Structures are given as C-alpha cells and as structure tokens.
Image (cartoon, rainbow, N blue to C red; front, side, top):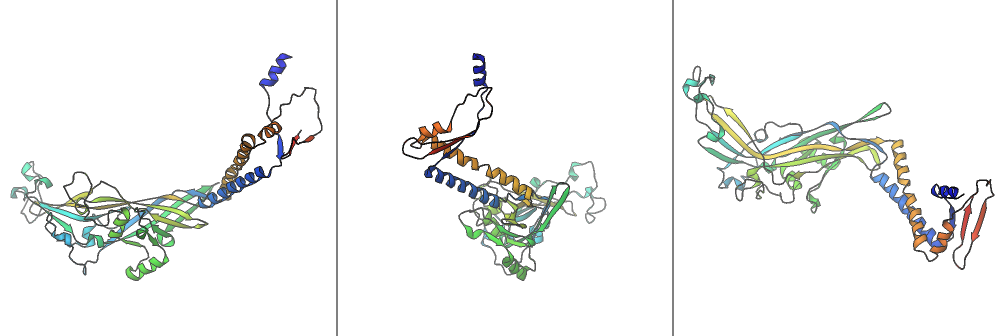
Length: 405
C-alpha cells in the first residue's frame, strides 16, 4: 500500500481546473491585456509586413554616369592653394576613372599628381624615337622608370568637382519559389519611389525624395527620369561634417591640415529595397550614404610616351561604392496565417499575468489560491462520477465558481 501511495505521488498528473472568479478588477485587467496584445499583433503584422513571402535581391546592378557643365562656373578659390600648382579644368570623361558606366562603383578625381620620367636611351628602340617601339633588351637601362624615380612631380586640384552630377541607374530582381512555382519581381527605379536618407540624422533638409515631382523636374532639365544627384549633395548626406571637401581630413598618414580634397575618401551607398507598407505590389528603395571615416583613396595610371619616358597620373578622389540589399516579396496567405497564429499565442501571457495578480497581490489571494488548486486522490475502482459544480462564498467579496469533473 505504501509503495502504491509513493508511486502515485511520484507519477502524479496535473490537469487544468477552470475557476470563474467574479471580480471586475481582475476581469478588466485581463481584457486590457488581451486588447493590448491583439493590437500589438495586428500592428506588427502590418508594419513588419508579416503577410509577405520574401526574398533578398539577386542579380541586381547599379550603374553610375557623370556629367559636368563647367562653362559658366567660376574659378574655385582652392585653385590658388599653396600645396598645388593650380587647377586642371577637366571634363567629366577625364575626371571619372577609368570610365563612366562602371557597375556598382564610380571614382571621381579631386586631385592629380603628374610625374614624367626621363626618356630611355636611343639604343632601346628598334628604329627611332618616332616609332615608340621598345626592344626587350636584357639591359636595365631599357627598363621604364617607376613613379618614385621621376625627377619632378606636380600636383593639381580638379576644378568644380562638387558640381558634377551623378546619375544612378539601378534595378532589383528577386526569385520567390513556393510549391514548385517561381515568381519574379523585376523593377527599375523609375517604377519605384525612393528616398535618400542622410547620415546626418539631425538635419532632415538633406533628405531627398525621388518621386514623380522630382522626376518630372529632372526630365525637364536632363531629359531623363533616372535619379540624379550632385557630388556636393551626396557628400553632405554621407556625413554631417562633410559639407565641403576643404575640411581637414582625419585619414591616417596625412600631412597637417591636409584636406579631403587632397587625400580622397570612400563613400558607401547601400540601397535598401522593400515593399510599400499596405500595398505589396509596389516597391520602395532607400539610399543610405555614409562616408567611411578615417579612410583615403588614390589610384594610379600611366601613359608610355614615344621617347621611352612614362607619364604617371596619381589620382586622389572619391570612390563611391553602391551595394544592394533588402527583402521584397508578394502576399502569401500561408505566411500570414503562420505569423498570426504565432502572434496570438502571446494572448496566453494575459492569463498568466492575471493569475499572478490574483494569487499573489489581490486582497483575497488566499481564497483564490485555495479555489484554484486541488489535490485529489482517486481510487482505482472509481468509475464515472457526475459533474459537480460548487459555488464557494467565504465572507464578503467576490464569489468563486469551481467546475470540476
């Protein structure tokens, strides 16, 4: 007998007992919690777009092109800076290196240092210096000199770089598969609304909306509806302090008071794609420019001259790098159902919180606890007993109806 009692105690089973507490305070708290949780589930489902089957962009691209109309622009004041020998008035094709139309990146030259090495000996040529054909002789005298060996170097700033207009042509493609079906979303920016969000959070005037109004104005001026920004707008949006390239650079290994115009920099431009809230058929994109702090950028190219000398162009400037990310999708009832069920499971929290209030904080908590928890020992020969519903009232206060089976 003792073994049976110990076994029953060790392997006891807890079941639910329904207790109706007639207390308006607990009932009001319960309904407030329920309404709050349900409101959270609905708002979160809409704002987080939990009704969409989503995928990240694939095989997307960004193409940059640049243009500069410097005919009516004044000579910049930085052209007379002592560290350079003036300015070069290049066109956009020379300023952009190696060429406009690169995918996902563009380089804008702000300063160039030109260095020309001494000509090679005439014995290094097959015919004459006019042919420019250098014989591959086994002689160190015929080896072209490096940039560091050039006898002189001259630096120039590139004029009016801030006024260059950059056009961004980008699209997004994603693949959504479900039960063997494949759906594609392919959009270019003219079919989407977008926004440039400044890294300077305190100055919303730097944010730019790319919508029908701006595109109509762009078309009237440039005959295109693609997104167009000036380098000045892009740089200021990438950093609160970068309203001028003549600000002192904090890049490593720079001279005292050396500016960003002289050292160059890297600007990251992530593009985030997402569905419009409340209308999954339309997409939005957001430019999020940010200067990579404490970085500088330079690149070098050269031209071999007919006399065997080499002219080097060491370019310093702005390397703009675009990346694409985000999550776009289409409406899917199954996804909505799964997220709603997961959200509605939170309603159990309302009952748990009210139980805690009832058992540990309410004035009648001792009576509530007595009514909520019972420990029954049932003989093995116990058959079916009729349902017993008892109403316990102990002194003034709320009544408790306990239903046991």
